[in-house]
Length: 479
Image (spheres, rainbow, N blue to C red):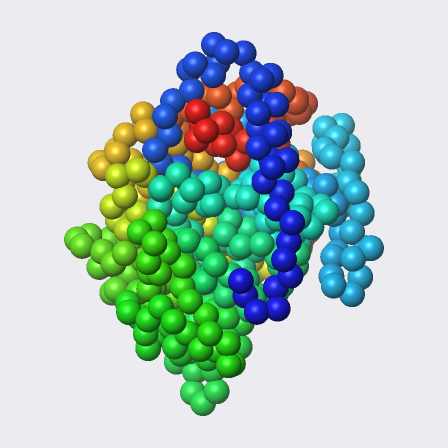
């Protein structure tokens, strides 16, 4: 355990009990049709709603993204159990929500701006099957530990990994790997991800040796909280591929066993763009920690060119050339994970979609969406080349909507201004909303999500709860 961590009561017995109850409620003929699930890939466009995707389509001059043509297309609700702010010093500010109301959602923007989730609670719901309170990382509303998809997969002898365009210990990747009652406890979360988890792949940003433009930091590093701290990061870099014992601030720590052979497995640390690219083909290390040479995001926080504004078109500022794309990172992750004949779980996050939407940055939102779509296409290509849709389940969705993005007014559609031009799009918020978001699925067992879509929205039609993503996956894994 990480020094100072409290021992938390396990929630696993109740979880198994609830799973068994759920199994008993499903007709036997449906259970008989559940496939054997080898690989699970979930791609999350953080903050991505329906209109975000439509804006990308208009800009690219296409009718739909390939993932929009997946056979299962549903809406998804994202609200948490408790919304509002939560902090160590003021936990009472978290309050119970009232769910999703289709009438209010399509008539009152003020309704959509209240009681919304944030990424930690949303990631926890998607990863564990339980909705929780805002800012929780893998914890229930009573602050008990919730087991997650990564842990389920590892328990079955599969490999597991996470890839993101934001810091590796940020809310969404952390929600699939770690357990902490507060998402901003980045350093402790990073320690837990590196030492306590059995992940085979962790990739993203947060490199304290570089700034937001990918330039090496001179003198003192930037805050190393996203990778634990500076002492840990120095030892991780120096001991890449071989070190399993670490001494940090007088405490001895040992890495975990990721492949089930009973021996601790070292992290092979990569930071350079060419190393991420090389990982996509040929022989791979057993375990990879990839932290690109950038601090917060791969591209979204790079400096603006003269004259660039929030309303500027994409690519007005040159892209940073020293960092990999999300698609390149995903290609490398897949090449590591698919070495396991038992299969794997992979979560991919386009995290900076959310950051651009928070900033109401139209051009950079399109850039981030395009990069995320490329990553989805990389996954589709991998399935069709190295696996099959009979054994692999691919899910594409978001964790919530950010920016209340519409056209010339709230609930007014965005408009097409032609390929290469920004669509008619406006943000009506700088925060998350309680809007329904899209859910797409293809592959092994995907059709069973329709059985979970037992609620109905007046515009979007049948919708599922975000927590039901993991609930079906659990059933497929336990079959």
